[in-house]
Image (cartoon, rainbow, N blue to C red; front, side, top):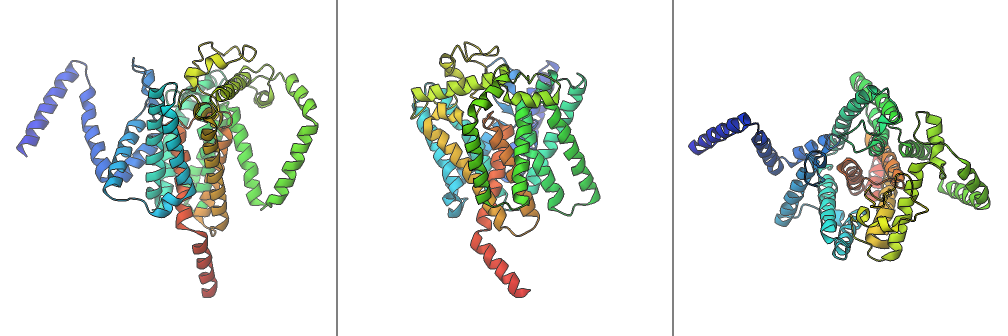
Length: 480
């Protein structure tokens, strides 16, 4: 014990001296020790800590001279959780066989293996192996540990509430900051900084969470105070989404609402298939007229007018944002054509796409160096970086997540979980639809809620298999 007191005195003395010199880094040591203790003895608490701080995390790249892109405090903590899970799994198996046999788990494992293979053939192997490590510290702590964490169903609500609380702080900060600029469109692109890089990622996460707010409102018989809080959050987030000026977020929410109507009115698949076939036939016969109308569309996205901003979604003739997205997509496809099997390497798109831009496709926001970001698609990005198999893996993952989620919803008995599950599915639909136009699954802001929701679906799917629910319903019928 004497050694402890001696160490404490020495630490306090050194800290006070350094603070007098203007150095404050030693103040982080006690917090670090607390986090280490929590990680080993209360991993569930650390998990919730990470979830709460995810919307509030920021990229240290903006504050240090070194070219290090790292979101703190979440990503270092996720890496620590990854190591703990790895060593615990070596010591004793944490997961039952049903989890490893689940199709979504299998797809995640295949995806990580394929990223490893394509990293070895990458144009920039170091970049690609860093990308693999990042994927591992997102997928394993959030999906794998999340599956264990959500076995206590109360943790599902804790996870969602804490993420919403963290995001609400960001929303209030953004709205107050935006108000100082008169809520104009130009400032709406960056007022959420440093918590979100730009308005598109901010809008995507708001849209992802928005349906879940309704799930919390209607899933349980909440008291008056909780209902008031949820109604206030629904209104607050609606304002935030509108003022995010994110067209893809608006469009994805419309799509999610249409899907909700399908559930609400129990429309059979055969009718949807019929409507889909008629729509394809109509588009095929009207293609020339549709293209002429699109070319005549001169609406711009850089406006405070909501109607014109919505119309600008279909402007492929003058809107720089839309044209640049088409430029990125075209570059991604040409990259894939050059290396169709293994792609150019995970995480390398921004470093290799510049020569694959066509001069006729460049816009006023294009750069010859190609330094302005990614492929603007969760699906075309992997195509260019990991080849056809990479794209097929993410598409299959999305399909299986939604298919298993929907079939689980249809077989669950009425109750809070069923209601909440529907809104989780709708939230995921907003993101996967948004993923056609943008990609954020390389950031904690999107990965933690998306893979967290996926872990919830898988846990419920294993916990409530079809046969078990049927037997339960039959037993209940006999009792009644």
